[in-house]
Image 1 (cartoon, helix red, strand yellow):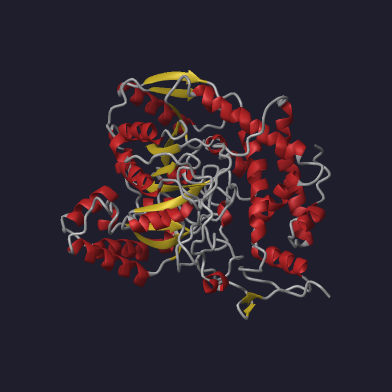
Image 2 (spheres, rainbow over the protein chains, first blue to last red):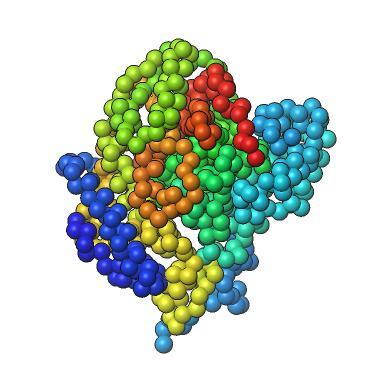
Length: 95
Length: 487
């Protein structure tokens, strides 16, 4: 749980987040500070403690498998930055 | 002065045909025109649409429309910019969403509309609900109506300021770590975060899905109970909403709290707690005793670990939730040579500094080699924190604490130090980790300058009736909720 090895550039790549060199530097310092604070969780013994993902755990929430109206096509495309022929337009993925 | 009314006062006058919904809505719009140039609570509002909704409400009222089926008929309610309202803009106070217009209503909004409410305005907030002051809004900082050099709290700062400045009858916000209760405390209104699962999150833009809840800002506890009754209930569109029956919460407001046990956590009387805040909370505890409640000391031993736990879990969930803002189906797209570059550039240009900070932190704590050390450990500490509360509730019916360690701070005071800002949420964060309900009610003022102080009451899971019963009895026995901001 070392705090010195947060490679901001690498993590930003994982997060698909373009940062300027200035942002990388500033974030690195701030996050080092925050991670230093978070270190305090190591003081606790959590052996045999079950993790909590949700405060009100519910499992196997299902609904009837039936056809219902959904968001109309035009509404789904309404906020598209680029669209054509009723589809979202994206850059070429496969050469 | 119709904009000064509570929901219960306004609906009584509307039912008597003493006033019209149009007059009430116009009074709110006039107040916005008069004061919002200084307060900056609203990102936008549509005058014609608000008045058209008011006219529609007046038509139903004129036709003898029944109050019991539409308990909010003709009541103007403003909305935090994180909830989808069909055909209205939705930006989460961020630049990344560009000109996004909601194609559907959030379930909570749908329910309020069905109850007759006039849904208007987009209220300012910290970008994507990340912050405690609205200083992280990409557009501007909202000001505290009690002192415009100070922040209103956050992230739902616009929602609290709009109610305190009498710009609407009530408003909606969302609370992930205190984002309803903290600004309610700092602006002197009532703010309620319900039990996780009480209100559907469908149509609430997700920040941390296991912590987020929608809740009301109101001028008194009765109005909070009214809005909670209107918005609660299981929803097939949110599989984390809980199928618990929805009572009429106003029926719980008996004014009588004799024999109820209120717990005081010894860990909340920390250093850094302002002397005037402490004095007000101490006085509130005395008031509870006068009202016949029994005070018991309790312990929440893992309190000191709550902020660290929260900033792992909340950022981890946020980093996953915010992946959807990639410039493909919506967002202000920045083009790139390939999809990866398009995502990165869009997100780099669109997100503000605090959102970037949390995405990076959240991505890091989930990344290979760190997951167990950070995220899994935090989830285990979350269990300890939740168990603290469940154990405490074996000894008491509700827990009483300050909502915030200090009254409203000055704009700019903490904005350069993210960790200091995070630590100001110390009293509100555990409640979200435990999934329990919490309410903040006004409990006094600092002396000079005169700033509101909030009392937080935390209840058992789905214990909103007892929670509101206690809050209401206190409110009715004290003068604080009748004080109005000077603007």
